[in-house]
Image 1: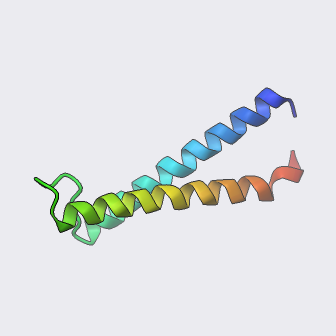
Image 2: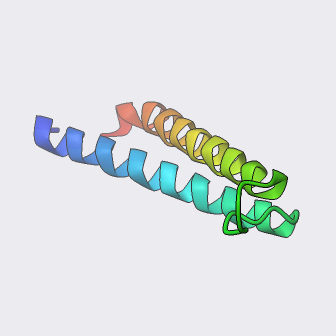
Amino acid sequence: MSDTSRLLKEGLSDAVGFVGGALAAFWIARVLGFDLFADGYGGGSIGAIVAIGLGGGLGLQIARRWRAANAGKD
């Protein structure tokens, strides 16, 4: 696999993992009653911000582990 192709796969998988994890965490936070778009910085808003940050980081780590597990298959 060429360098450009490898870097493109790496970048796209990181982006999909991060955005997917953040979106999943956003919806889970909404179901649990945390509102990201609430007025001010109340507990619910801060909880949603933290959840989305953690979800994005978790999604990124999952994408990197998936890529590492499939590295030999290219």
